[in-house]
Amino acid sequence: GIIISAIEKRIADSYTYFLEIAGLTPIAFELESVAATRAIIAAKQQEMNFAHGVLDIGATRSIFVIYDHQAVQLSHSFDFSGESLTLHYADSFKLDLPSAEHKKKDVGLNFSASEKLKFQSVFHSINLFSKEIENITQYYINNFAFANPVKEILLCGGGGNLKGMDKYLSSRLKISVQAGNPWQNLFTKSKVPFGVEDLNSYATAIGLALRAAYNPLGRNESI
Image 1: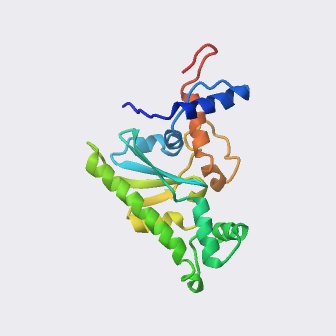
Image 2: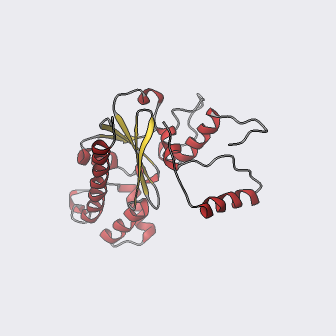
Image 3: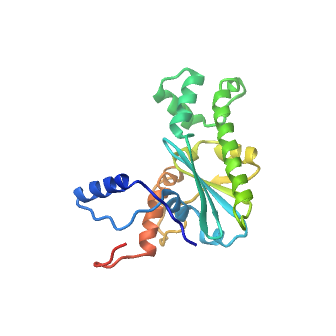
């Protein structure tokens, strides 16, 4: 298959310019969704007869990717993010932002009975987010030829580490949702140098590194 993407020339030129003044020579630019998916989707999963979703919940936005027929079929960006969740925690519990961030990481969605009412704003935000994901998966099924159903969603990005997020989204979407493992496709038996939570924040960077490993360039080659 062929993937075509476009970006304004002034934006691409700005990236090229800053890399060059840093003493680096850019040889390729790649979609974030493609890089993250390369790290998250295992080789054995690529052969399955159903589609996978990759949900990257970042600090300022989220990206949902549908991977089917061994290629990225659809990518969609959402305003939902780790920062927006922190604001909901701050508003719900009347906390400053540093305290709200700590509360979010410490408790996640595992609230106590006494805190149920306070969590309404948080869950309302996540419910809207899950509905958008559901709409995208339905759009894919209805509008793409040979589309397979999405039966598994893999989480990455810092926001994907929120305690209870996988189980809650799974219950809302009626789809298996679990944390991804960006380390699985690396050609190494070395022990992971940091925890799974930190690892998922580097999914895109690991995917870019894998691209270089799959397509090594000689001294005089370029893309």
